[in-house]
Length: 172
Image 1 (cartoon, rainbow, N blue to C red):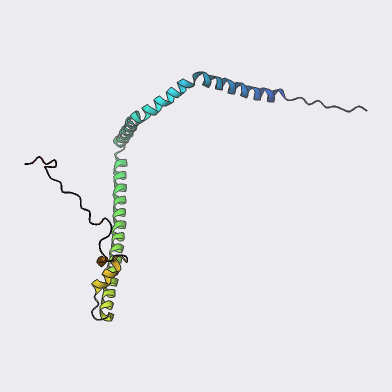
Image 2: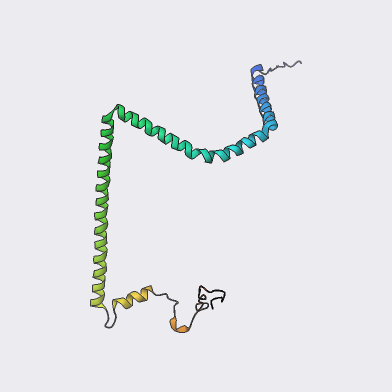
């Protein structure tokens, strides 16, 4: 009884692919191990120099963009007119929206004032004799734990010493 044995051969391409990846990985790690301090110094140098030069670079980019825009306007003056008209339309639109919102806010404010006035008149008409609006508002605003006749609280009588030009007693 002989068993048929199958011999499975791995593809040479697969083995060489994984070997090449591992070879590249080993060489990269060896390079990093040998030159790690240089990488660290380079990163520290970049961390120091980027904040120094970034504002200058951004300013240079802005000037370059403005110069390109100016050159485009010189080539095509109608473009400048068109952009100015669009800008004016946008300003008018925002102004109209602002005015609408201001009118709505004014109406709400008037409604609030009218409501408060009606409440005050109702309180005056229906209130008990001797009760005034100010006393009811004072009772709402006062603290519930505040009792002025119970004496002073702890530390409420401290006042700092006066300051004078002669703090050391040297004025005569």
